Length: 178
Image (cartoon, rainbow, N blue to C red; front, side, top):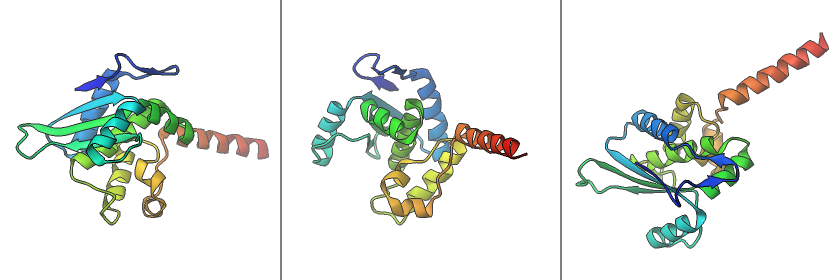
């Protein structure tokens, strides 16, 4: 289930397509190997700040929070909360769409629900995220952007559109030289 709060939230002119995100969530969840239902809240910085303060003791907004379900949860994998405001800023900063950024954050959160934790492991989550990003055709992931040592371990994966643009630029340069 994907909940967008408040209502049908839009950031600037970028609309969040709930059906498309639901299809991606199912694909990504299968790729991660995560069993059970995942609930996703797409909200704003204020809501993520409240959740972060309440559950982690950190009084600041964040991009994604993961809440794994208890083992006896009966078919639930857990909950994810994503700030669309935060996601929009990051999308602009890293040169991709809001939809791509939300997908990056969903993948990151799913890995946490599956028990991965980049804050305590030795780079295993970064490597797994890199492989899954390539499989799901996503641009550079969250861990690589915030942990420089992860970037050295896991090389960035460019989106298909970025590869196409780079190839087109290269072809144009070669034509001019010919």
